[in-house]
Image (cartoon, rainbow, N blue to C red; front, side):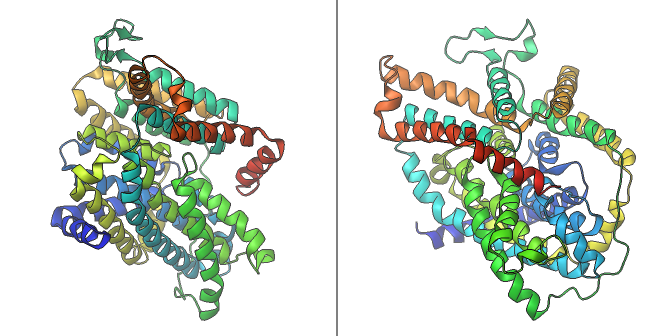
Length: 502
């Protein structure tokens, strides 16, 4: 089938009452999470994973995807109105967004974020639809060696492009790989690292680890910080941008969309890096670069376009190759496995309604975001004033109920609490837990493909370099390590994440 017939199939699945409801619920919940500082899509998707067990697979993925790109949108509202990034990808939006609000242009800033997000989201979804089939056809030619090398690139990319220390990120990957080894070996049945606990014979539960690391750890870390919110109290007037505003914002939106589309595909980059890079590019390319930092509309348009484009194209390697490029995509991959869907190129051929239904729902979701978010700004402002001490106990209880419902055992809650303590320690040590969850998800598959490649090659390790595709991936991985170790690149990398956030 061609692209248009595929999209027709997708829209026929996405416009059912059930799927429209979950698309709306995901976008609404994602926006709410983006508005509330301190949670983010990682923690929210982790919390909701247990509750998607009983849902249809397509409905579950539509809900989780809506939370992901909805949070990328909602974070801008908090950045503009409260001088706080509701989500990490909105850190740079704070710089010019809140200045616009102080100048009486809060409505224009929010409208700019909405327009940029909608345009970039639609373009990103179009790229996903266009490149999915060719990439999946290419992936069908991959064997064990090629898949193993591709996953090595994914892990190296997560380490190289993450904002933290290269050494610490590497340590997180090694911890994630070790946790992925827990349980019975698939081939021999030998128990590994279970410490006599029958609950660990099938390995560490993905949901428990995710909720503990991201939800529990994030709640404890947020409670430790002092609440300091300068919430905008004025009235939103002149929401519609002027002709001059449109003339200034459109080049920034186009540049941000292009940057986000590309970085969303790269393993380890994600929506946060896309927004940082877009803002850095505006400082070089914009005709109004001297106004950035003082309420320039480009400072809102570029990063908000970039993070929403990246949120859509991040699904390309996850759905077509089965290799998540970020921790959030690793959670999406885990959700697919949880619903007995094998990620990779076979998703498009074996589950075309699910794949194209998800793609179509993204267009519908982006439309929903721009239609209902502007009228709900007043509600978001009121929610922003709710103290954390009221919100977080309810969220913690919600997490515990979800964890217990998976296996109906208190051991899972204790294990999640241990993972939460680990997540909190990692944050105190400035170690990003995102590479850990990525390695945990990819680890078992890497081991399987490694063994498969060696079995077919009769134990000859050269199979990983004699295959041109596998060799290309390994050389790319080496290139990423060399690049990130260069002093100039390390300095620029730190400047992008530290200077802009400051």
